[in-house]
Image (cartoon, rainbow, N blue to C red; front, side, top):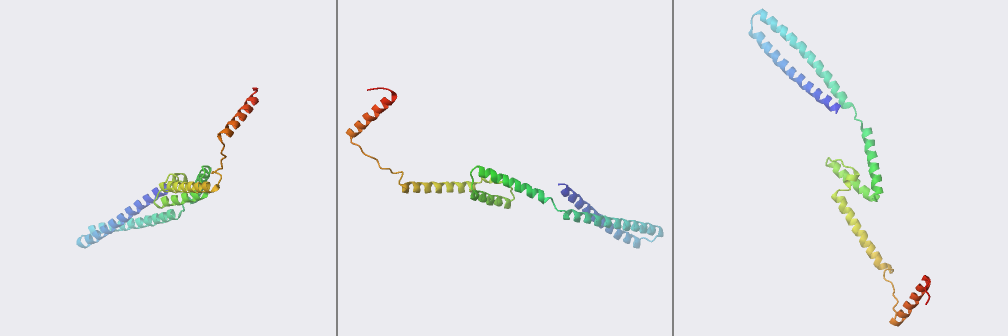
Length: 194
């Protein structure tokens, strides 16, 4: 922020100094025309003095311009603090990855989220991995994967053989005999005698 302000003020000063140079050049041209048109020596001396003053001012402006250009070059040469921001981004990303893994996302999902985040970065939007979870594309990918898992489980269940059990069939007389035996056992277990 501070560097931007410095650059703006430097540019303004460069522009004003360039404008002043143009004015001094115009004034020197006017002074030369005055010298040729005016014949009195007193007026010529005044214009020569004015010319010398303008020439001196022009030198000062050029020196100022060179100084400003040197400062501007130094500002451009200074590298921004990319290490801190890069470390900060890496820290945020690692924390996001931890949160995502805690929530049950796989490494493959996290890689997809990184790709989605890169797409947003290319559009000039900086989002976190946690924000990328809410992206419509990622939601569609998750939904598709869940449907595929359901299909896979359904196919495995039918071919497993455990889901289809063999049932014994009893005749009504056998069932009545079985029921009486079990109910008598239950009553004896509860302390009733028959």
